[in-house]
Structure formats: structure tokens, C-alpha cells
Length: 196
Image 1 (cartoon, rainbow, N blue to C red):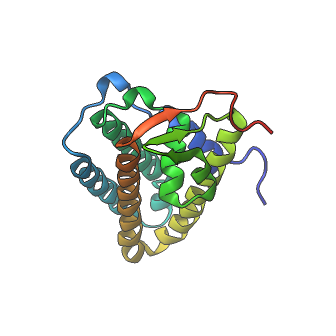
Image 2: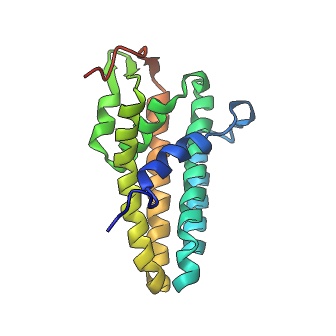
Image 3: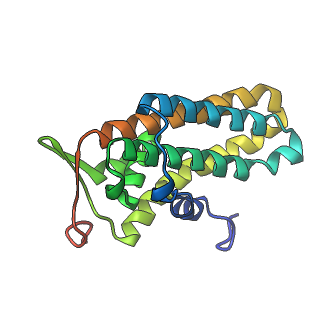
């Protein structure tokens, strides 16, 4: 039974997107988006594989640090791709949630972006709406944590699978970020969306 003061993966993800965003002044482009995505996805694979090889209780202690490290890699990748496309000034919570939601297949994330002609309109979000979408993303991540918890007891069999998942997820994030950032982006002003 989950108590209200128990760890919340939904809250963790909301906090993570705020805390893991790099300083825009320190973002460095390391090549074309595909090259940066390949580097980031290989790094995510290595971290997840190494963490996944730790068995039993020691392995359980690596789950949250692993997710934090992989999320940080993914956030850095999004910012690098946005700088490559000269969209660093457009980066905001809605854009980041849109990319993660799309990569994870969260339906609610699709309402954030709307293509009109050659422009991509990104809807502004209230805090409540952002938390709802981040909650859906966090729930997906939470289920991955449960799977990893079980997998730590069969580490030699499951480590490659979870590492592959981290790699593929990072590739999806890079691909979607590149696709989104390569278009003209317009951020919808606050107050014109999610009014209910």
C-alpha cells in the first residue's frame, strides 16, 4: 500500500526536469544531432548496463542513481540539439515534457505540440497541467523502476535488456528533439491554454 509520504516517481520526474537542465551558457554542441544522439545513447547504455550488473541489495541501491544519470544524459542531449538548431532560447518546461512524452508514447504529450503550416506551436502549461503530464511520464518511469527492482535479482540476464531500453529511449528523445527543433517553434503565450 502506498502512503502519501512515500517516494513519488511523478514528483521525482517533475523535480528532475528542473534540476537536470544544464546551464544554457555551458551547453556545447559536439557534432550533428545524430552524432550527439549516438554518443548519448551509448553512454546511457553503458551506465544502465554497469548498474544492472550489480546483483541483489547492492543492485537495488543503484536504480535511482542510474535513472538520474540517464535522465541527465537525456536532458543534456535535448539542450545540445536545441543549441545546434539555435533554439536554446525557446527551451521551457512544456517543450521538454513534449519531447519526453513523445519518446515514451504518453498520449497527453501530443496535445502540447500542434503543427500549423511550417510552424510548430508549443502550448504553454499551467503548473497543474505540467504536473499531470509529468505524472504520466513519471508513472512510465516508475514501472521501469519496478521492473529493474525485479531484474536486479537476475542481473546477468536482465542488465543487457535494461541497457538496451535506456539506449533506445535516448535515441527516441534525440530523434524527436531534432525533428521538433528543426522546425520553426512558436511558444503559445501563458493564459491561452489549459483553461478549464
